[in-house]
Length: 95
Image (cartoon, rainbow, N blue to C red; front, side, top):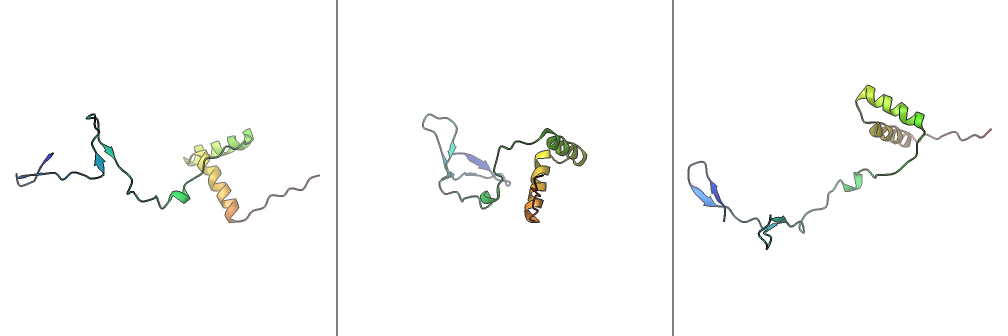
């Protein structure tokens, strides 16, 4: 057991943490997450995707990133979110 010092000079034994299990070979302790709650924000996390963009589009957003101090991937995401929120449609008229 570990001994913990109290501010008044007395000591007491630390209670063992039930979520920490010692390894049988004496190695570092391992935490048990079986009783952990699911992250409530997991649905809101960003999904990694691969997208092919024209070089001039990437250059544009990278120059904006230098001006604003915001990473260019975040700027592209903000622009796409704005388009989706305003339900912006692209004009696909072929000549």
